[in-house]
Length: 165
Image 1 (cartoon, rainbow, N blue to C red):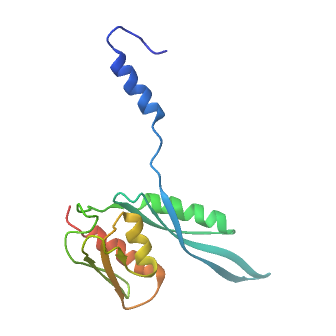
Image 2 (image 1 turned 30 degrees about the horizontal axis):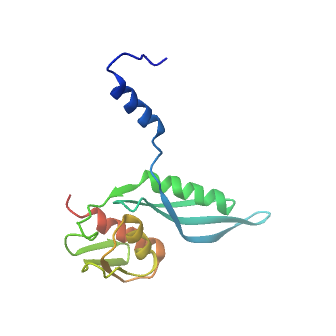
Image 3 (image 1 turned 120 degrees about the vertical axis):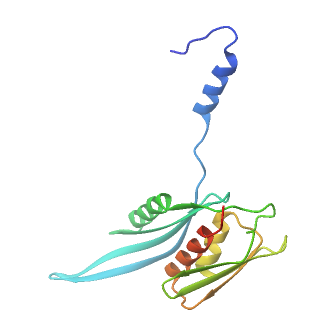
């Protein structure tokens, strides 16, 4: 039961507001779904792997990978994995980054540069997806080395994580 006293209505309203607050809106984008086959004694076993980027467009972004017997379960696992591996990106006032950053993962290299206001996201592939879901709006990026979607996304995450807070 809620204890109602005279003069305590402000506290009561705060608790009601907390109860009505909705959880954060996460935006999920599937980067890739692939079929994985494994040769077993009775033939081939078909499974699916999913790469998902999750973010709130306010400075938080994560990358998740999931594998399951069907696509929906693989995407759910990837979303949960992405929520466990969230990073926080500090944005400037024009929704960019403060300086040029480099990211590396495996053979994938990514160079991310701040851009002038109004220029938009100039990037391709999974790098663009990660930058958009992080909330960056004025940015330029170039991926070097390999064209593997997962490695480029992980290189982008490592570059954004290296920004000094």
